[in-house]
Length: 400
Image (spheres, helix red, strand yellow):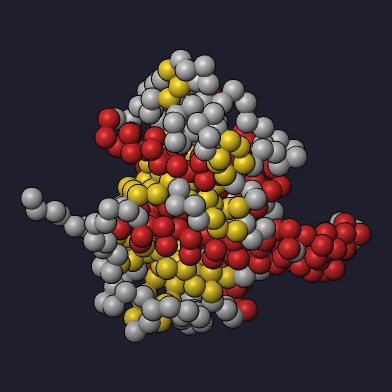
């Protein structure tokens, strides 16, 4: 059987240090992108109220008309490519909304929304490792922390600035080095937690680094200093705000780096990885655990695991969130009635003493392998303490 391999599109993100002129030009571009997005969203919302639909082509024609008005003539001062791209992003947002995959698009805020602009090939020049954007005479001073794939050319370039004031450029390229790894017989169940970030069915546990907790005192001090600054105190308040943002960025960077290392290792060593289908958005509503759950970043862990598995020919199986992995004996299949969170070890009627997290990981692995063999939604046979067998199937979700 022949296997057709396609080149993976991969984004390479780098820091860069703009000149004052470049920073001013990019700031103007960010503002124009936000303005065009909000104008187009307002136009489409008004049409939606009249039960009419406005597509990308219509908003593109509107953009041409807006540029001819005196009030919006400043849109001509920046590259037209990012403005067209933001209209395409809005079209994608509405497509996801009509497909019931996302909520209705929201307006972009000057203070809270991400500052970014996307350039396609007509909006930049990349030669000999030097990137020059439209409306700029000098190339960007990029910190090349790692090389691009040899011979690759970026298809899109996204420039952004985070709340800490750092500038980033992301280059989307074909990466021929990403290929499926040799198949292995390895399969592992992964149980996420708070005491330990990951517990594997092999018994191995990965410590939870708790990055936010380590910087909590420093963050609280910076937040108190920001709270004491009056809202009219422009420069001092902006400086205090950037300090808070820098601490948050430091926490997020360290967390992301640790998750990348963990997920890469899991994907390289195992052919099949079984996880639990957790609804983190509902779990963070628990005010006692919300901070710790957010710091653990379970959703980001799953996202990384899934796209890396797709890159390297691995399989990630998500087991139904209602599967009682902690209460089920992985040796005899007996289902316990209760299993409070404070119980970390327990002994089954069969005499087996379980570590709660390791037992859950083993059960997830068994359930995931059953899913891959028998079909989605099938759960392994299990019995209650009274000896009565109990099986349950997950009801298939109806696709929109």
